[in-house]
Length: 130
Image (cartoon, rainbow, N blue to C red; front, side):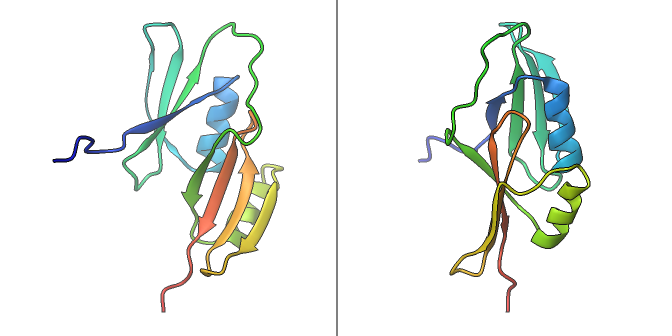
C-alpha cells in the first residue's frame, strides 16, 4: 500500500508577487492555474508547466519585512528542450545563467538561473536518444 499517491506542489515564498509572476510566466513559460488568499491572508498563485501535473505555489504575505532567501536553501529543476535556445530566450529579458551550461558525463546539459528573489532554478537538457 502506498501511503502517498501523488506529488502535488512546492511552495516558494516571494517578496513581490507580480515581479515573480512575470519571471515564471514570461521567462520560464509556466501557466497560471489559479489564485486565492489563504486563511492567514497570504496571496497564493499556482503555476504549472503546460504539459505537467505538479504545481508551483507562489505565496506572498502582504506588508512583510525582512524577507531573505538563504543561499543554497533549495532549487527547482525544469527540463528544457534546447539549452542554447533557452539561453537566447532569457537574454531577451536581460538574464544570464548564474552557472553553466555544463555537460555532464551522462550527456545531459545543466545550467542555473536565479529568480527575482534569488531562488536557484536548474535547467536540464537531457541527452538526445540514439
